[in-house]
Structures are given as C-alpha cells and as structure tokens.
Length: 260
Length: 260
Image (cartoon, one colour):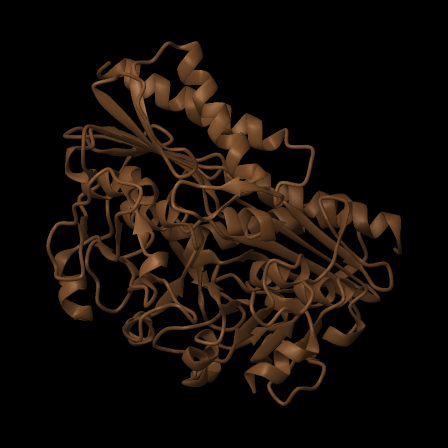
C-alpha cells in the first residue's frame, strides 16, 4: 500500500470516525474500560476506534494498528497505522470545540512515518502530509509562519501539571492560544497560525504519546517546521504505547532559540 | 421589535456575515482604513460589517448600530444593535480556527441588553440568549459547569500584554485553553466547557469593548454564570466605542473566590 491508495484509506478512516462520532446517541462520556496505557476509555473513544477497525477489516488492509485504546494489534502487516481515534477527548466531552482524529502510517518509529492525516472533527478541516511531498489543508499547500519577533503566537500547555517554564514561555508571545489537543496544536504550527507549540509536562504520565503526535509531527515537518525534543534535537519516539515525550514544535528555529 | 422577530433578525444577520466572509475573494487581511477606535480595519471586518448594514436596510429595521468599525450609527431607532462583525480578526487572518460574529440588542449599556447572538464562523455553531429566557446552543439549552475544584478548565488571556496575575491564575487550573476571541471564550463558560474566562490586560487600549462582549455577557448570565469586573461586581459598560474593561466570567462564584 503506497501513495494514492494510502491517502484514500486515511480519508476513508477519517470519514468513518467523523460519521460514527456524529451518530453517538448514548452518553459519549461513559467510561467503558481502560485504554492501552491504563487511562479510562470513554464511549466516544471506543466508537471512534471501532469505526477505524471496521474499515480496515472491510478494506482488507494489511496494516498493524497501534491505537490509544487497543494498544498494538498485529494484523500481519509490514506497516503500522498509528491512531488516536479521538485526540482531545476531554474537550469533546466538556464542549471545547477542538478535537480530532489523528492517523499515520509508518514502520517502527516517528522518524519513519510516511503519511499522516489529522481531521478536525468540529470544523471538518483535513490536514494531510506525505513524506517529501509537503503538507496540505483541505487539499491546499500550507507553510509555517515566517519569523517575526513582534508578532509571535504561541500555543503552550499550561495549568497545574505544566512544568514551571511554560508560564515564562507563554509570557514571551504577543498572543497565546491553546486548543488542548496535541494534533490540532501541531497543525496550528504547520499552517502558520502559531509560531510555537510547547508541551512540557511536570507529570511524566501526562506527556505526549506517539499516537497523539505521529501525524501532526509529519505535517509540521512537511510544512517546513521543526518538531524537537526539549534538548533541541529532532524528536523521535518508537511505536510503543508506553513511550512518552515533551516537545517543542516551531515554524522557525529562531523561535526555539528565543524561548531557551 | 421584540421577541421572535428580533431573534429572526439576529439569525439573518449572522447568516449574512457567514455568507459574506465565505465569499471573500481578495486578500481578507488588506487594511482598508481605521475602525471607530482607531484600530486598523481589514477587508474581512469591512465585508462582515457591510453585510450587516445591508440586511438592516433591506429589512427596514429601526435600530441604531454601535459597531467595531463604523462606531455609532444613528438610524432613528429606540434600540441599538451592538456589533462586532468579526471577533477574532487576528485568528481569522492567521488561521486559528476561532472567530465569530457577535450581535446584541439593547438601549444604552451592557446591563440592559435584551438579546444576544454569537455565531462561531468556523463550526457554524450559534449561541443565543434572551433576557429571562435562558441561553441556547443550536437551539438546545446550555448551562454553566458545576463547581469541581479538581476539574477546573480556565480560559486566560496571556502573553506580553497580559497583567502579571494572569500567569498565576492559569497555573491554578487543571486545564488551560484560550481561543483568543472574547465572544467565543465567554461562550465556553456559558456552555460549561470552561469554568473561567479571565481577561486582565496590562495595556488599557487592549481591554475589551462593549462590542466584543455584549452578546457573550448576556449568554453567560442566562446560562447561570457571572460576568464580573475585577473588583468582583457585576460588569456594566455604556454603549460607547471608547469604553474598555477587563473581566472575569465564571460559571460559579466559588471560582472567582478561588482565583483572588
């Protein structure tokens, strides 16, 4: 599965999730069990994941799956679909209009992701990137924002569980936004809306997982930006439910230098 | 003009803005002049305001207008339409998916606003309230969030122009979001998505105007919440292009007490 067929499959998966979530009749917040990392799985998470797995069966797609809910599912494939069926579950349940489905395809780690798609489930916007072919929003190429130190817009993870440096970094930007869904905050950097997405958690268990960032990381990089660990290296992470990371995504390396 | 007819007019105005903005073919960011308070007016602001004024002419609506762009327009009415044709212009131009049209009807000040409507121009969601009749989102009643000190979600205005207390307040919440459009941040409180929207600017010229908050304030209050000045009194403000304010909107008074 390469090229056009993969893109079509990713779009079909996103459509299936969008449709399944819109059709939920019972309480979407009801906890139905635990996900692969021990976090509670709500109905909205389960419904979204099941929609993806059904399409994979129907299409007879030979892909393994690494998902937030089910963990690693060996389906006899060479490649693995890295899936967060609902990124921003808390937003979806409380009514913050920022949640998405994030889907990527790779082999074993973030650095070898070949294609990624993030669908904003509120607006319906679709962000997509294929390695070496740039990033698109609803089919139109997107680029990161040019560096302008007087017009910085940062998305910063804040609150009781943020590292102390987060408040200092937020204070450096003319404008601060935060959507609270990593895939969408990464896409803000990719489309040039934000100059930085900064996530530094004081609580190791709340750091980002590869399922949250696999698609968004490729989309930022293909839009001309950088996704770094907090030592300033290009971020990498294995396909592993238990691996977690902080990160800084920037449109321009000078933003990274400005916040250090 | 009262009751049902006003609601229908507000909906017609929101539809007109949504349609006009979607049809913009030239650069929406081009600066075409100065608004009533001296801030630059871009094409998207102008197009949205002109769409409203055209509908008012067409419907022969006897309403004065107080708008971000045109200032006060005396159209021989008893009541005044308080309008921000695009709240979140910067978001719209940079690609942050959070901007709205905010429309309210009253006589002379925030406290006498009778009806208010906020249309999220990205998702199409419509928030509406009539004094004494509650608040609705897409026709369904909404309520503020119950107080739970362990599950606080705050929207806080941050960055270089925020007052120093803003970072401290953000650090008190389990989760922090910010949309950067006052009418939409107020609506997050009204629908129970956020427990607090806190705007405390260190720069007087960047404080909120009545056009930004007229509709959202009524929507929060009708959803059971409080919109306070930073002395903790119910916020009021005259219909005046030059009047500006900070504010704290809360779902429950205990949130206000917790952040002081």
